[in-house]
Amino acid sequence: MKIPAKRDFPVEKVRRFLEPGPVLLVSSAWQGETNLMTLGWHTVLEFSPSLIGCMITSANHSFDLIRKSRECVLNLPTTVLAKAVIGVGNCTGGRIDKFKKFGLTPVPATEVGAPLVGECFANFECKLVEAKLVPRYNFFIFEVVKAHVARAPKYPRTLHYRGDGVFMVSGPSVSHRRGFKTRNL
Image (cartoon, rainbow, N blue to C red; front, side, top):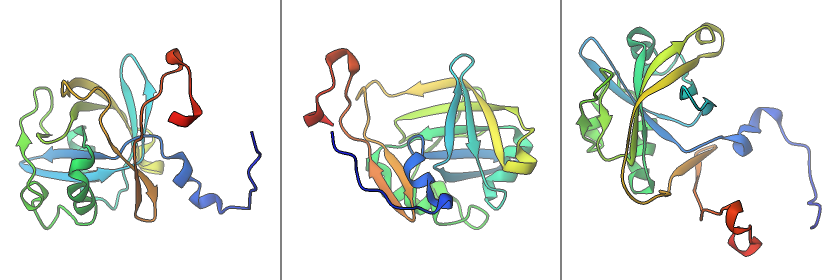
């Protein structure tokens, strides 16, 4: 294996390489108002209970809805929804109904007040369990209290944000149980 040539890189841009997972659509609701936002900064913190950490900037319209309601839905879109995902991320819900504008279907959740996005592959209803890091870092810790996942495909093609408006699509799945083959990677 070759050692690649490297260069100095701005530390404030390392997230391009470290984004942990697929882009999500986060739905929220508070006192009759709903919103939808695109989220690229999240991480699994625990398996059981299922804890997810999310960085939601205070400049985002959803921030106050989630902070006040203490709940949201993390919706997992596939590549079919790429235009909607980008569109949702490039406008504010303070001025428009994003569900209507992008042709998405709000579906009632069973455990939280925020709606599911019907077209998404999976929907994870969440309750806020830790808010100590919100004032300083805008970091919310949610517990997934109900999960809804489509029956197929087993590994959906999802979008991953790389920064600067660049996305990548999840590639073929490989399993260590079958042995990694570099031609598959």
